[in-house]
Length: 287
Image (cartoon, rainbow, N blue to C red; front, side):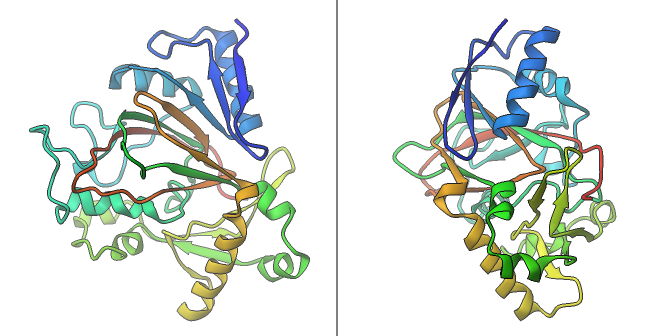
């Protein structure tokens, strides 16, 4: 099978046609998707009305899957599914002050998934089961390879050798969420990663995750926030960013090693949004 791939943005993103994710992939199709993923960074599959079982099966073609450290945000019967939803089991929108809805709004910060792990995730696959109507809820993806390659030399020289400390607990502090269970917190102690990431293909990318990046190692909070904001502003320029406007049953797959992303705000008190995500486990530390 030869898939049809339409480029979505000059920097990253491709829409794939000609594959049904509810069915097992043959070796050739899997290889084509893998190659497109490596090239485009973000892949969009439209009209994929799949269940969680099919979602997980498709994801496993690309590696082992992570399980979120907080088990109350995963599916009891299928823990590889991370649930991002403002809709309760009764089918009604949950109160905006509820913890799940508050937690969801953390995605309104730029971030890269699993940076709080010693080996961050390789990628993620997100299924839009119910998507926001009337504006809001779009996801922006930034190409961190190009952001680094085109970075002014003075800024580049300032970040060489620096490490960021990433923390799941610090991420939760942005919304004053209650403390994690002790056994959950113990699984995700703070970790440190270089701001300039080396890849096996000899490319490099900027590695920041503003939502999780508590500090630059050896710097105080004010210095850290100033640099992180400067780097985020640089990387979030339109020329580096693809914005995905969700349609129901879109499946979006992204490479987590050289992109970061953000969800645009919406009204969680009136606009329904139900998204299920898998995370493909990483195989190497940030080099």
